[in-house]
Image (cartoon, rainbow, N blue to C red; front, side, top):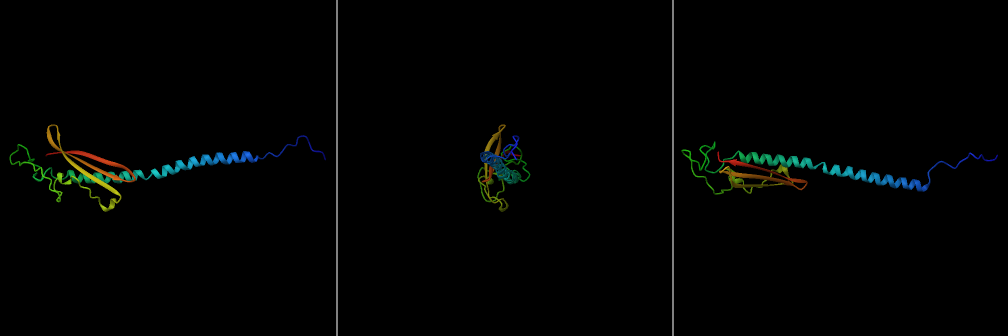
Length: 158
């Protein structure tokens, strides 16, 4: 039986078309998987940032709850170096060890065991704010997995 003139070659793919398809799909999935991997790796950073902020805020709260100066009475009145009756001069010495006033925290870097992998640095400096004495408190918490968190505040003599 003679072959019909309508008969055509097989409708499959050639080897070159198949190889090109594999290369294109390979490149596309490589890009897709690298984007997914990048987002997965960076997903942990917010957790570390929140933990660092927790630690910094807790330390800041503890410090600003302390007396302005060793000579400041409990309750803060009358403030040291003020013109109020019964006020005494402020003590500019930095007696470390008891953590009884704000100055004692300068250089403090002790991190609770629950925050392993984090480092903390506290600085306290004497400043003038609106022509009144104040102390600038800065708490910096850092971890290897995220950027450092820095909190700063002024504490007035009251």
